[in-house]
Image (tube, rainbow over all chains, first blue to last red; front, side):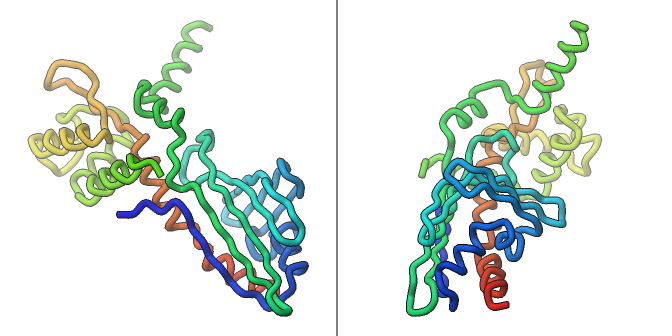
Length: 143
Length: 109
């Protein structure tokens, strides 16, 4: 079947790296092509957030800021529960080519199984709503 | 890449390829743990066929059987393998092609 761990794309853009950098790393840029609204605290460890008119939201953590050649963040794997610790790593690298930019985007980590989460999920009680409802019942019984 | 994830995802997709097994999983997801008899009363599938599908799903780790007397065994959805399969789907759904097209259009404006 081939479980994809990594997605890679290379595109040539007819604009200089400084302009591409602005589109990738500013709230104004991100909200123009990626999300409908965006906020970003542009420093390693900073938070960024995008929202869409559909109601979807993406929370990112900025990991790498090397203007104007490298920008990276991690974010949640779509479809996994919100408290799942697994995240994919997205890295943009910008390379000047003539008057334009060669932009490479790599997203990796789709095939990871966080050991802890894996063993917890498989060995523990089956968890989820059953145990949460059990905790609610315990709480109400104690009250 | 952990070799297990591919095996686990494959079991999920094999399970989901069959409409009766999809119906059983959907019933457990929406209604919670149930016995084969409960499921047979809710689905247009015979109890024998449901028992067979539940056995296969349990072997693949997609449902877990609660201990109990044979006819009263309740089956519960086990979501961890679904989350592994979801990671596979997430990679297919990322759509960087569409996003990079949008980036180019934005810069060309």
